[in-house]
Image (cartoon, rainbow, N blue to C red; front, side, top):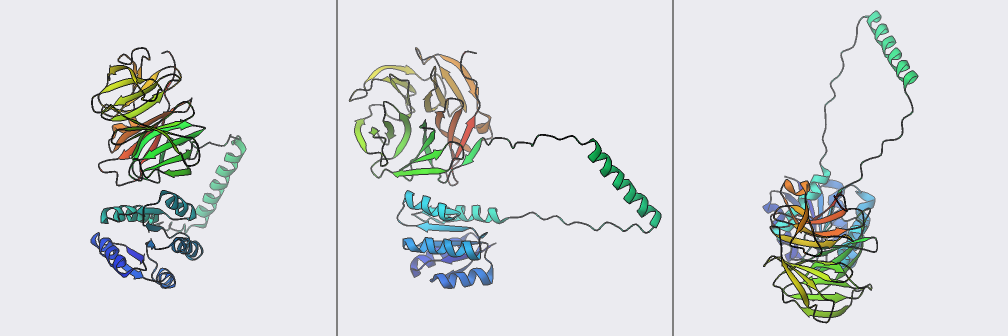
Length: 384
């Protein structure tokens, strides 16, 4: 059980959140004013803060106070209505986690669990070393230690600094990644739940831009002919301008029941139908007409990408990458297992290629209650 400090100006909301937090075994001290909250923080030393942002100045003022008085205390900020851009702003201000409405007990508990885990510390007890009572023994011990140190420095050769291994996976600041694409040295990810497309720095995975699409439920992504195509549930393929707001250029009714992946090979737009298990080669006309269709040779397609030579698919059923013959995608050149997914716990949803390695996006199983994840994969490209 942990002590949680709760800040909410509205009494009804404050009571609902108090009951939600206490439902999972925590003790709650609450405040309706920021100064009262800071008194609780300084006097009671809670393990985490849960704050409701009633107005934009609430979050900024709270995070500024905490950064000065309790910089290591994690703060979970609940916002309403759901606003991806505001969530990114709060994360940059120092919020540990941002929870969008609706504030279910499960969502609140998941955020607090992460915050509490960040505070955990392991301790080890150092036992005292018995003192050596014999002066001769003490002298010989010191002499031996000095000889060991001298020998070490005499024979020690300069070594190049050890470089830490390059990271291959990153946690995302949202829970439901669906589509993935690489463009302009950035990784682009769609989140169907927040109806938002994010642009990430491909080295640090920091969020650089977030565009909310209130009329779409974005899934698969593909950049084609200076535009961004998004597969939007239930049956739409939407063409967006590459500007700051991703303004809509065209909207096409998707004849395929469930487009889960898209890739552009420089001439055709390829899509995969997750329900019927088909690969479609489309012409970039007003209707994205299907020029040819092929049976998918894997288990359950989740995404597509073109590496400059071959068409690749992400098979969520077998947790592997499939390299397809571009002339006949029903033929598979190679199958590459993805050990990151063999352990279970992650549902692969998106696939991208940056010219050197493949990237996949994943949603946490079973319900995406934790942040999604990005994996980088080293796979040899070209004839084998």
